[in-house]
Amino acid sequence: MKIFFYTGPQCSLCDLADVELGNTSMFASLEIEKVNIRTSTDLYHLYGARIPVLKREDNNKEIGWPFSTADLEEFLQ
Image (cartoon, rainbow, N blue to C red; front, side, top):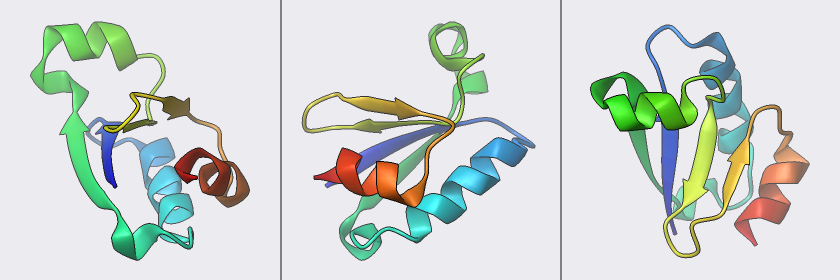
């Protein structure tokens, strides 16, 4: 499953989200594409106040911080 990980430079919350994502049972099967929202004005306006945000490519569902490993397990089902 492909996941877009919307992040930004020096984002400590993104680091925490990365740890939670790594703790999921599906981590090994995920294709994670980190996207720096500062590379696009549109992405910055969409996600600037909300990062970190994970978005599934298959159904476009999103989950924003804060989330736990349990929340991610449900999100990835």
